[in-house]
Length: 138
Image (cartoon, rainbow, N blue to C red; front, side, top):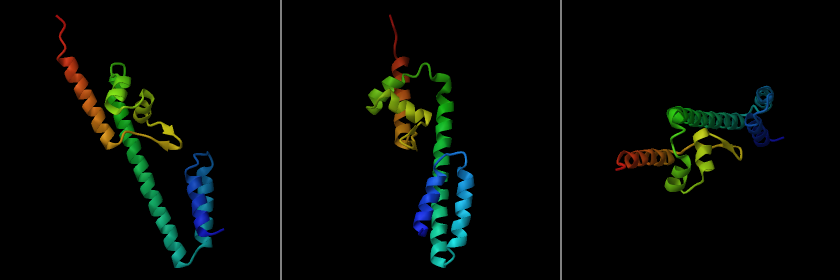
């Protein structure tokens, strides 16, 4: 098996989420480092690991943003009209917005609000707040 194939398999194991993934990852990683020793292969392995760490860092940042968002809106979940916000401000379904707020995994990828989406969400909350603040029943 070529290095590229071994690294692809290693990537698949890392993202499998199975209980024995770590054990399999370490075993294959050890096999790869002992099998491929010339400088070109070592450089390719290093690039693979660096890209993997960047990916993990990005996923951790997304998870942190999700937790922060979820914590911030938790006290208000009963009064925030998610369906209205999703439809009016995003042109999407309630499920779409809910998936992003909850950090749901869809088709193997965890979805959260992008920076632009977060700005839109904040604008929506402020806009609704202004509308309700100016409401007066006589």
